Every structure is written in structure tokens, then in C-alpha cells.
Length: 333
Image (cartoon, rainbow, N blue to C red; front, side):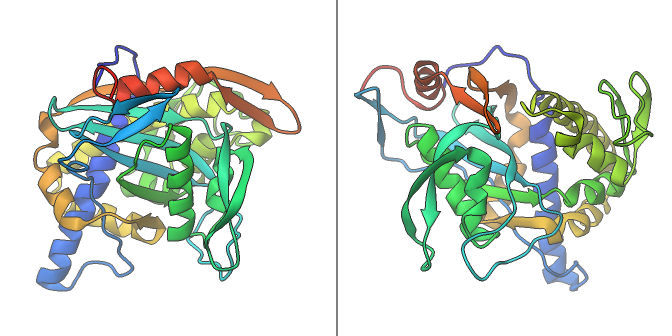
């Protein structure tokens, strides 16, 4: 995988792994003492696709996928609580999408951040939960088609994979926006510098000041967009990056000083989590992830177009080249 020299918020990986590590430990403690919280999910990061080479066709050319790569799609939905719907429509948009890419040979990690406004071909689910066609919408709507839980996540995975020229995605991990204050308060709050004007939205967040976020104020800092006239999502993405950086540092400190902290963290987020991941592979990986070099964030280049909504159109040629650089072996298949 081509190394990225782009700067980014590499601490996102630490947050994901620490959350996952907490889930692993909590599940083990549940079996040992039956004191872990109920309603728990399991999470893992895969350790590789397959040993055989697979290919994707990009721009009419066939490329071999790097078999040493593992991928985990992180989905942040804009609902507060998990809710399963009887039909195949729900109201929860996938407001945050980040694909964690692990190179298990080079021991490197890259995060591909996907703008929620990206225009994409989204599968539409019929009455039997199977695709009956596609619609072109902002990619955040992929999660709307489904039951609000696993089917919605799987539809989002399929949409992201299609956007990336058919590159397979191994697993997903989804958290609702309701997890933000729960996670924030579980670590005792997060300190950030306010760079945007929250007047009339949250007057405790004063531009230019350093604020220790708790509860709903953490939610406002991370989630608010429309009331702040950020249709293009640019400011919110920057705030999310700043928040995760600060959160990761607090998480590290807690993990180092409190052996029981991971169980508390697990209890805080378990009710907001949906994932298809296996437990055992996570246990294996979390023990070795310290050996990985975190490469940072990459985002597709493109153009924001103002219509009824802001629509982000990736530069197709640059996106194809990005996929080749990130996922494919050198040379053509």
C-alpha cells in the first residue's frame, strides 16, 4: 500500500481500538463473573481478507487487490438511540463514515474519511429487504434503507464499496450520536478550543475559548451543523477531528491509570453499538496493534455543489487513482 504523507487525525484509530479493547475485556469478564452490562455487542478488526489474490476493474483495467489489507468501516449515525424498524426505511443518516485500512504486512494504518454529502449510487431495499434498484443520493442516506440496525449498516457497506470501485469491506462498526455524551462523560469530559461561532446554538461554547466539554455540550460540539449554516460539512468535520484527537489522549490516560476503566467504557457505549465483528480476531489484533504505524487521514478530492442540498462530487479520475494507491498491488492484473 502506498504510504500517505498527508497529515491527519491519527488518534481516531486509538479511539476505535480502545473502544474495541473495552468490549473484548468486558465480554471476557461477563463469562468470568457475569457482572458485565447487558445488551452488549462484540467488535473486532479483521486480520486479512483471504490468502488468494482478488481483482477489481478500474477504468477498464484489472488490478490485483493487496491480500495483506484489512478494512473496517466506522459508521456514525445521527440518531440518538438504536431502534429496529419493521420495514426497510428509517430516519438515521450515516453522518460519519471512515474506512480504517490496515496493512498487516507493513504494519501501517490509514483512515479514508468519506464526506457524508458524497453523491453515490445507493441500493434501495424492497419489502423483502433485498435490493430492487438504486438511487443517486448523498451517501449518508444509504443507512436509511434498512431496518436501522444490521441491514442498514450492510447497505452502507455495499454503497461505500461500490463508491470505491468494488473494493471489499471486511467489517463494520456503527455508533449512534447518542453515544457522544455517554462516551464523553465516561472519560470525565474532553477539553477543546472553540473555533466556530455557536451563538444561539450553545452559548457555553464561546469562540476562541478553551472549554471542557460535558454531556450535551460535547454532543453540540461534535454534531451541530445545520443550525450553524455548515451545509458543506467542512467545519463539522474539522471539529470532529479535533474532538477525537483530544478524546484519544484522555482515553490513553484512563487506560494507563485505571484497570477497570475499559469495563466502564464498554457499559457506556454498548447500547449504542451495532457491528458484524468477531470477538476472537479483535482480541488477537488489539494485542499487536501497538506495532502499527498510524498514517493519518485521506479524503477523496472533489467539488461541493449547492443545490437543494450540498452535494459533493468526487473527482472520478483522482478517486480511481486513490483506490489503486490504497488497495491494489503495483502494476495491472
